[in-house]
Length: 466
View: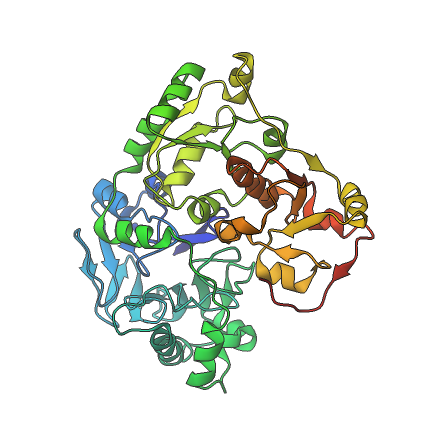
């Protein structure tokens, strides 16, 4: 028996490859599926099942494409309905893979069809659970994504409480927990950076598994402080439930090299968003006017999903040379399939053509220290949790995730400064603001990490952001 966690840091997502005696099961695959096919070929094995823990909201799964390419059966938990061929498992239904078994445990709460898959080894011993978004390391799945009709988030939280206590917590402490996500995912509130644990450890450390916790306490804790989910989540659910185009077709369409003139023509004709995915240090030094920066070096796909509200928005790319396919692939992971091409020769070809370009003023934390002494206006674009734990005294929190909601707060004339934790998110925010006409925005290089090395007065008491 072989179990491999295939973790994608950009999405904070774990897919799983399980092989036994020439048969393979894949759990929650990414949209690009060739790597799973290659692994099975190396093992001289056949992919028999594709298990989906639920209808994912934060990424487009590769279940449909993988089934088409391999003939494997797609399995969802009870109550799921799909627009493609799939097997809807019964609660406690057993699936044989080589010499092992996988048992479908219906665990509604994150969503109604959510299912945890229990793996029994060659001796029939409970070995591991693949818990999807039902149980994370240090947290549980948010219960507000599948509200429908009369079902509220409180109802879903109640279902989740029962699922954990009747299906998961009775399992032995040495059972390994393999979740669908780790820290950075918007599918929970306090996910650990660890991506694997044991159930016994989670019973000791995960607040949601406290043995003495009442249902009322659980519902209150898991629903308290939930931020609105990213706007692309419903579309990803729709794609995962109804179907989607092959990523091979999307890559073929998107990897179209555009000359400078073609790039301008396509951008104007289709009102395409110019998305610059280079490193922030390169973007600062020069970029095409009106372009938005979201760098490949960070959590690229989730930030695209959070900030570009229309997944059908036509996009043209400015990429580091050789990174075009990677950018298109990572966009497709979150349902942004309408890439019309990329700028051939990257930004250097734009400059070589003597085209107009913009720059972003970025200053050091020591410069900010002097500016604050002269009553400078500063905004913090980190998440509320980061801001609440430690921030510059008297500075407003305008989280990047919801920047559009704070546009009216930014001054139109006088210079103002923005910072994040390390310098990636602040450049994203600055690019958005510049595209909206705020050319008086100044980035703070190095973010809060650099700010803490200065004498800028900070407030480390818990507070509420606006």
